Length: 426
Image (cartoon, rainbow, N blue to C red; front, side, top):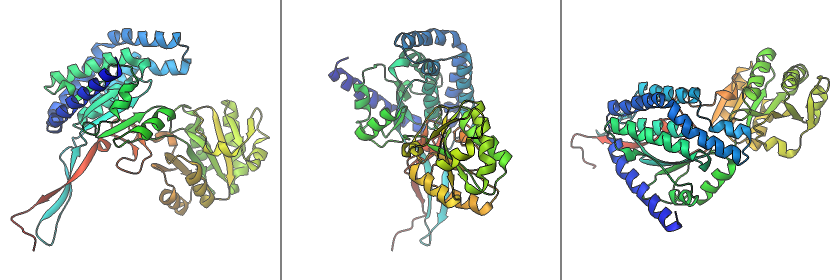
């Protein structure tokens, strides 16, 4: 496709999405749920066919020398597809929030004023690797009464095309416009440039992928962007705390899975508990091969741990998102210093305090400037599914519109509604 054709093609997608969005906005809940249940059924019926398409992507990825962990993210295993189908059914079972009216209040003039929840309209989503995101985005779009244009990575093109076809089949079965979910069929990068510069058709862009992709889209987009750049999350072990619980939670927050954006990359420890806590967590991390990049004080307490991989931390380490078995470790005076460190070096994603002090917990919740702030829980819980949102389209570290895991509500807007009985302004 040449540049002119790509521009024409994306304009057509935009126009079709805009037209479909008006029909989606007024679709009854039962019809949207019918489409979601049909999609769940089609995913289960087409497991073998989907794996044939997926195999082509995997073969290309391996031939291109893609690292095995990245190849793994491309796989549409029967388990992955079953999770996608279950996600569709869970969304169908959730209440429909479109049209609900919030906070209706009578004013002195006699009018009643409230806010109604409505779909955003059209969102564009640009994502890399995982083809299951096609189903997550499509199902959330259907449930929230939006239309969407999806642009997956070229490495998953065959899988994404096959999945998008099933989505359109499910929409048609339910009597909804097929153009409510469209996949960009070309791998030409120019399509991304066009998609993020069509405010007449696209209301918001959601990038999901590496830092380079998100920085490019944030810089070049002519429509609003819901984004998160980094997941430099922290676990702070307070004085006083339950040491055994702190060891368990700090272990889970780092090692349950290394690659997600909600894994803890920094461990802050109050000086009052450091001598007791650090050798215990150090032994757990050493057994799992986690490298500890520590301040002078923490390294002195960790050096007695057999087999510990210890490295002196640099200034850069406090800001780093490792996505690997590496963690930065710092001893701090207490809760004030921990909060100051997190607000300076963190990425405003997710941060946790492990404490027995109610006042410290409240101060941490109030003062840490992050999308999710936790008390006595693993940062790994920062997830739309775990928060009861049914699914998520991403996690936003922005402060406007959506913050934290973005589920159905994050794909809606509020408009004011006013009910009167002939009142006029005096």
